[in-house]
Image (cartoon, rainbow, N blue to C red; front, top):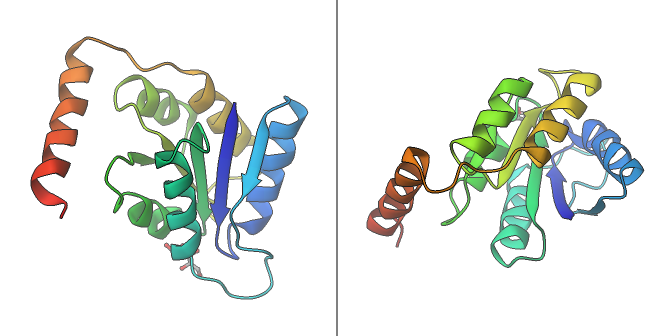
Length: 151
Ligand code: RB5
């Protein structure tokens, strides 16, 4: 499994902690910036780079982190085919996969601590999508909505 990660300066430290956590499990990671926690950096380029990596299948999933997780998740969701889910607990992470087939996990470094972030990441990466049922119908509706609204 390969994970694409991106952050702004506010999410940098948690992103690196999450990368260490994933490396310990033998999961390959690619960091699409920001490069440090010191220089103020927009979350937009990182969200774009992670989303493209997922859409082009250079990564299985994306993880995006900013201060709140909001800006970077909103930006990721501007890409056709990306379903980015901002999660603040393990239950949301499980449901994001099981019901929404989310392919990008968003988190807020100023909202949650690293221990909770690790359990959210583990839940997100281990939970399968519930194929074939009513949630498949909902996700197909999301895809149809994209088709109707994205240029
Ligand atoms: C940066 O100060 C902060 O605005 C950003 O990390 C994020 O929370 C925006 O949504």
